[in-house]
Image (cartoon, rainbow, N blue to C red; front, side, top):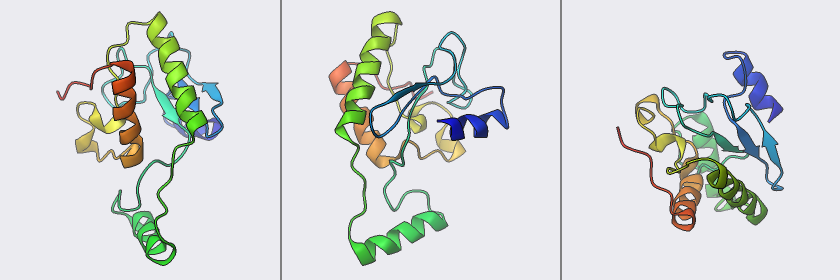
Length: 148
């Protein structure tokens, strides 16, 4: 979380996310929830930014050198797709329930689902992350972000 904060503070005044959750289920507070985040380009009003602190992309995503290397490693070693730890999913669900009990949250989405993100080349939260987002929407009965 500190690495993300340092990266964001090089361009902005603070970390863009309100919360981060690591693979052990530990929840970190980022930007004060009373302030608008900067986690979704041009679409932060009324958004609570939560980042899962791991790579949730599949090997073919991104189309860059890293994606090509991951694809080559999969050919050699077999499927390397990650599984999201259950404790991290539980922490995200608990945090989501806590936030929806206090704030009027109606939408749950990954970066690339929000308006104007696809043109920016956003692939996050990755195919694995998007599967989690879809499952969380079912469990929480929250809506998908608007397309425009």
